[in-house]
Length: 143
Image (cartoon, rainbow, N blue to C red; front, side):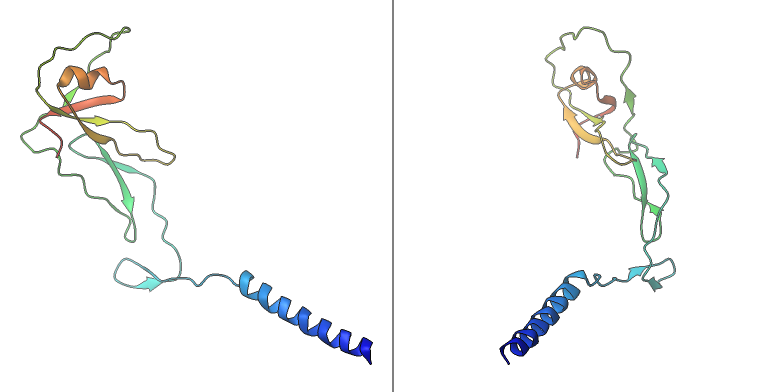
């Protein structure tokens, strides 16, 4: 009789272990996402990895659910003119101490592409172009 009880409790414990494992291995529920035209689907949307250059020199990529380009930042006004840094000297030089702020687009390293530059205010154009990651700038502080 004792062996029958052990066998019965063993089956119950095995059943409970299977139920617990089943719960942990159950796939997560799929959420609905939007599709162009307002519909929904349980399938993910994959956008192409192309980029669009904005007037301020930065780049934007496509975003879902309609895979349209993200809006360009409004940092550069239409009256501002983008200036590009020229060739850099091999040895760092000294910049004059004049405060004429510029908003420079600083390139950052990213794992995925496209990667938008980060706007950063520098004291003047010399200081901005002294940074090897700056390609261009506009006059005035970054917003």
